Length: 393
Picture 1 (cartoon, rainbow, N blue to C red):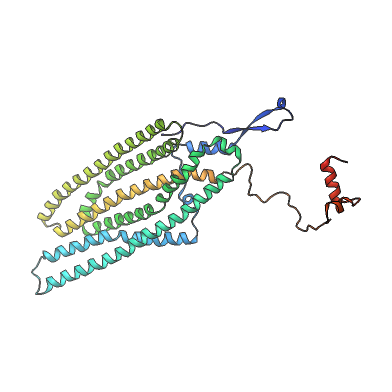
Picture 2 (cartoon, rainbow, N blue to C red):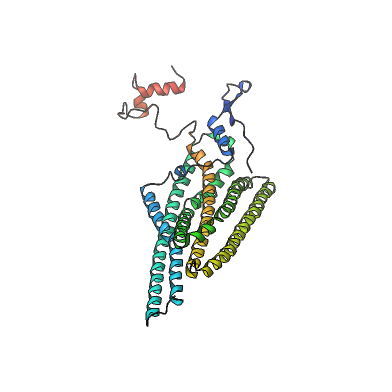
């Protein structure tokens, strides 16, 4: 849902008349406002990643760097756990009879490795969530402050072509969307991207033939995830616009538009999710069929087949979830397009500007005394000012 194109924004400027018959109104065109309106109505207009994070300071950059390392490290945990689980299966079903006490030794080693991975996951996931949440909150606060300050600095004519209720709604809604898209969702995307890459790598090492068969279905899952992301991103912008308009007089009419957008999002998102799940189960069926034949022929061990299956399936899940986080980032960039267009707009009258004539700072007292004393001075400044005020020359 895209808003209708808007003509050049303009407002009326009234010249102060000498009498009521001389009143005249001129139309003043605001090219910056018109440009921002056209920018917002452009299809798929998004701000860049660098623009989205333009309010990050040195501390935020450090937090994002630490959070990125934590997210990438935490993403390695799922494939590593599958490898450890496969080693534990080998301990329960060894190819040769174990030596006395060897079974207990293998189980203790596997348990210790699981505990180490678990402790590392706790630390890395905490770093991932904490750092990205804190930096997103800090940057969103600066964006809100800059947005409100920019509104307060606009000339009065600008408010004639902008609805005040929509301006206030964006502070509460759009900035929250921006904060979500540049915070935890970024960390989650890095987490699942790392999980997908590491899982595919392990799968190719353990059994590249089976891994390639499984990876052949990945484009179908990625396409359905992309379709869901695209629909969600488009419907979100329509939902933001309809919720802003819902605060106006025609509440029910605009609420129906939001309802239609939600229904479309749910329908296509459900179809995409169903197709992706169906492809995964078809993938499993093919894998077990081919894997059973290869195990019977001695081309692969059951433990390796199980490990390849699990790591590739985890990788596919990681690809799908990472694509969903990209949708959240697209929502944030779309919501930020309106916020930044207002922040970047230079007002016609800048009340905060320090340019212009400045009074001298070396002032001194010229005359002092009571009224009568100053009026008695023949060429006094005070006397001249009073005379001008009274109309006496």
